[in-house]
Length: 433
Picture 1: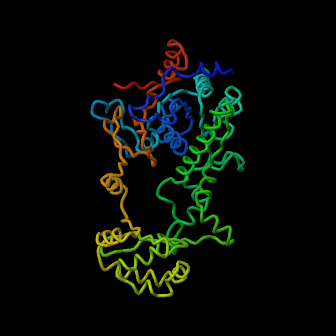
Picture 2 (picture 1 turned 90 degrees about the horizontal axis):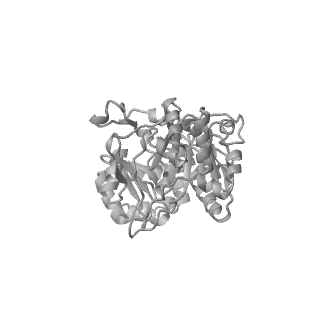
């Protein structure tokens, strides 16, 4: 495909214009064909969409992304939409699909498949998480798309990576938490291994995918050379274990579970107070001495058994017992105020909703409200990064097939061909009233 052919498959829409007085979005003008589903891939493309990329989410008509049905809970439709959109949009889907458009097309239909091939060829980035072999049989693998568009950045997401045997092994988060060592290092010291409460392996994989894509995009824009990126849940989690993997390699032994404590820092854990749990994180000797002064226990600072972190690790049980006896004498609010004033890292153990409301009330501005086409006003959590000069766009996660006709028209498909695809169910269009 020639450069001019490549450009001809791009939509006619202009990139998002910067708000007056603000810098342009860093990925404005970048188009992403998102053939991924569930969590890792959609999380990556949502982050890229937050930076201005145009993300077209390709889904199966009638079903869509698996997470559309992963409920309850659902964002229930408003009364005017209840009959047509029951039971509503699953919270799981809503969490990772804002700022995208949905094209619902059957890849088993030759004409529908050809449209998606054109979409991928004309995109800057393609991301997919089909099982090995399937994507190549569809003519949507890197070998075919890269041949048509040498500058394409192509990212494949899998549970265990392309070299892993057997190659078609599925990898859901809980399986990878078990296989990666994450589960073995999580949980109480005297209890069973535990999974982390969120699908952390998918989140780590989504972050790694976004980083790899951004790096490859920078080079592609300069050199015109694309990249074939593979990201797996197991490799992302192994690299995400950081100090624990290095500790295991250095010692030749398995890291032990320590519950809500830290393997190599003391005190760095949860403590009970008179009425609730707090976390105290004295990450160095100076902070430890500051902690002792704040809780009026200078004896613990002067005791040679606790003078340095290695000594405190060696005498963990005795020190934690002493700190616990002191901290349980007063309320969590008292210790929070006292330790914050003293500059000691401290936090209250909060529930998720409490954490969101507290962070927002503290000025962190974590919540955004969007107008969802069927659920009305919907609160969402912004990305973990903030760009001081560039407000992040916020549009609601799309309904299944909400933009099908729009995207196909932009790809140059004639109206009668689109109507034919709709009539035979190869494309789904969900209109918004």
